[in-house]
Amino acid sequence: DIAYVNGAYIPIDEARVSILDRGFLFADGVYEVAAVIGGRLIDNESHLSRLERSLRELRIGSPIPVSRIAEVEAELVARNGLSEGLVYLQITRGAAAEREFGFPAEAAPTFVAFAQKKNIIASPAAETGVKVLTVPDLRWARRDIKSTALLAQVLAKQAALEGGCQEAWMVDQEGFVTEGSSSTAFILTGANVLVTRLNSSAVLPGCTRKAVQVIAEREGLTVEERSFSVAEAYEAKEAFLTSASNLVLPVVSLDGRPIGSGAPGDTSRLLRRLYIEWAT
Ligand code: PDD
Image (tube, rainbow, N blue to C red; front, side):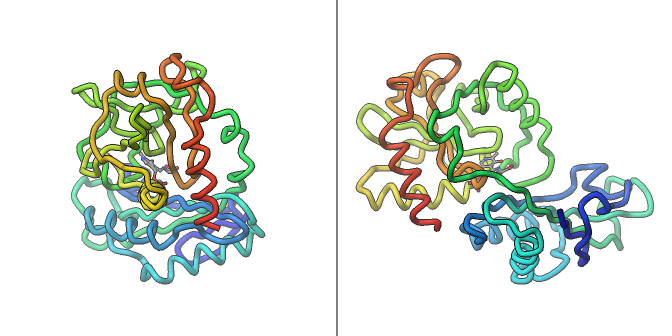
């Protein structure tokens, strides 16, 4: 497998960054994940514009123009012969001579990227649906920035796995779902209204969410951008999650309670199919 490190393409086990890199010491960096289907990056303009925003919000310089980042991603897809999977890219504030909290005057950003094979379309979870566990949202207040500081999400996902689930939905102090540990949360109400949280600093603005919203509205569905409580989600007719790595995945249970019939819902399955058509 070939990775990219600051301008060079090298075998992934030989790829190295400094232990003084601020990504390693402080999680002082941002990342993006885009799906690859049929050798093509999916919805990548959306991911790259979010990357630009994350960099700007943290005042990290882009090591190369963002238009050239797409070339690096395409080169990784080609060099790895990747047909279906993900491209991960990460930009940190770089390595300074010493560990100091303030921005170093002269550090150059570190840019790494790699590709990973994954069955995205023929995913077994798309057929069975996923089980979700709710956990308290322990994250910081700027969740709109796609930062590499993911410890709360790591713990959330691990709690889900240990509870026999595949994803965690994080819940704010008022009892409202923010989002999944690495996905956007949606429910379908009894009145056939799709509900997902309004974009704000409380959640990451999902690229897949945005596309799914447009597709759903084109199908005549109403999408309400508002908070929903765990109690409301328990009573939902359907639920699903969206992310670059899983596209649209039906949710079949929440905290052990079946959602709807306990099987992937029709609207969730329809939106998955329409998203794949749109993306490919
Ligand atoms: N995660 N919310 C969070 C907290 C996420 O980490 C992600 C994506 C999403 C969905 O965003 P998008 O549709 O743009 O992928 C929502 C990526 C896939 C990850 O961390 O692996």
